Structure formats: C-alpha cells, structure tokens
Image 1 (cartoon, rainbow, N blue to C red):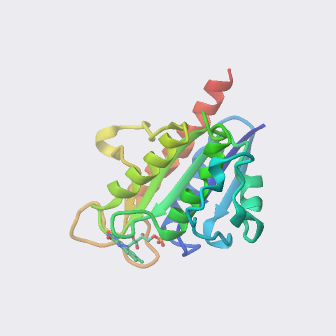
Image 2: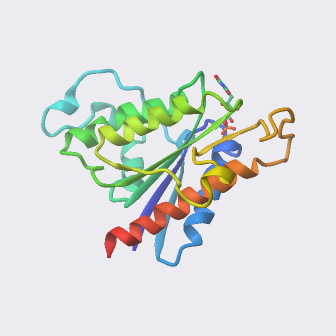
Length: 208
Ligand SMILES: Cc1cc2nc3c(=O)[nH]c(=O)nc-3n(C[C@H](O)[C@H](O)[C@H](O)COP(=O)(O)O)c2cc1C
C-alpha cells in the first residue's frame, strides 16, 4: 500500500491550510489505488527549534533535542512515505514558524544519507492576500529540493481557468470582494484537490 503524509502547517487547526489539506485528501481518494493517508497537524507536535549544535553531521546523525520532544513520533508517521504534502500559511512572505522549525529539524534525515530522496513532494500555501504565497511556495520547494525529493505542482485541468500555482487566499478571484466567514476559496480548493490527485496518480505511475 502506498503511504501519503500530509502536514497542516498552521498553528490554527481548522482554517485555510486545513482546508487545502482536506481538499488534497479528496483528490487522493478520487484516484483508484490503495493509499494509507497520514494527516498531521504540525501544531500537535512539540518540536524544539534547532540550536545549531551540528550533532546531525556526525554518525549516528541523531538530534539530541529529539530525546525531549515529539520528533520520533513525527518520524514514525512521515518516514517511509511515498509522498509528502505540506500546506503552510504565509507569514510575512515565508512559512509559519512551526513549519520552519520542522524544516530545520529535518536535517538529520538528510544527513542520514538522504532518507527523503525520491519522495514526491507537493507544496501548498494559504495567504491573506494573493501576493506573498510565492515566498511560501519557494521556501517549501527549497526544502523539497535540498532533501532530494521530487517536487511537483498540480498540472491538472486547465492552466488558464484553474491557475497552476497552488495558493489559496481569503481574497476572491474578482479581487474586490473578500471571502466571508464560512465561504470557501473554490479556486484554491480545486488546485489543492488537483494537487492531491496528481500526487496519487504519480505514485501509481512510478510504481508500475
Ligand atoms: C504573523 C502573521 C503574518 C502574516 N503575514 C501575511 C503576509 O505577509 N501576507 C499575507 O497575505 N497574509 C499574511 N498573514 C495572513 C495569513 O497568511 C492567512 O491568514 C493564512 O490564510 C493563515 O492560514 P490558516 O488559516 O491556515 O491559519 C499573516 C498572518 C499572521 C498570523
């Protein structure tokens, strides 16, 4: 069975990033195949910020901080996945601090000879305004590339009508109206759903 891990990167558990991840899960489920889906709320995991001790550079490449936080629990859900999707909010053009800590603390997985190599990786971003999500996507792409993952976008449907950057927004496509409380960003949702679908289809393709 293929394993897909999805991370909600916001400290808010039930808002835009969660919406994107749920849409991506819908996309995965629309594909004919057997998938173990592990949805992670990053805020549920106590992760200490990297202190730069560089212990992960030396065998056995273990992080001393992992003894006192939830890294091991997170590793169990994440490592061995065929694909990883992260939805992060735009905080000043970058990812949330929770996701930044996660990224930095993932260094041992790279130092233990690229444990995430060839995992399919898809970045998603939610933002208050349309602009700014690019920085989040770029941070996540760099994370994926530095780990040797295979970074993908949605590339589904019509690029003109559906857009091809997986960013959602509180601002409506019409640019003047804003999405009100309880409304959803349909475009963002569609893109996230297509991203999940693409990832699932790609796993099947690669395993053939
Ligand atoms: C500290 C902080 C900084 C933010 N900076 C920006 C920003 O620079 N540009 C922007 O468009 N939205 C910004 N936002 C808004 C969030 O990106 C937006 O509300 C996002 O959808 C939050 O995701 P969530 O609903 O999953 O928590 C910021 C929010 C916070 C809390």
